[in-house]
Image (cartoon, rainbow, N blue to C red):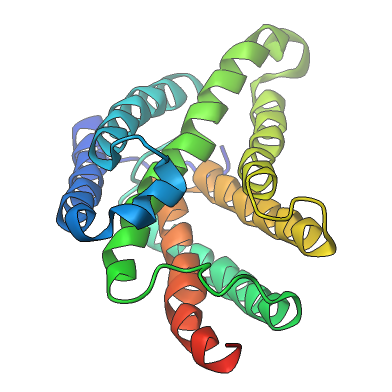
Length: 235
């Protein structure tokens, strides 16, 4: 670990995590009756409430493993602010990049959930995405690669795992997109890989809250702010 600042007690860290989980769940419960079609885009036929609860529980267990064995952190207290600032900077650069790409590629008109539903939808789905695409795969991969720690060292295994896990979300998005083998899909893959890798970098250097804030900033730019503007500019 690069930072050695004392962490908050585990009780406070997990209280923060479960507070985020509860907020995500409340958003799903409030939005689901009127916006089930939006959730089906991500969860298919699975119940969004159950998915959120299960993801939160599995995420808590996985984070406990990552914290206990690999020195990851959920919430670092004062240092989290630095992580959030760095996340905001990364998200701003990548947010500008995807807007420029959208002007050229023209992603589908219905790419984004409309406002005001988006204000509840994206924080909730983003929380689940962090667990499904980052926390769970990272925990499982570190377990699989753990026999190599004696030869390569724990930190190298962590960074190898981070690079490999960063492949998961972009690959999922491209393979399940409408057009998987186009130049637009290639850009999307590279762009989402950059997001995932930088998020996991923030997670390693700071904490889970900072990583999640990265996604919230990016979603605010791409899905909400530009999501409103693009409908008037591009269509």
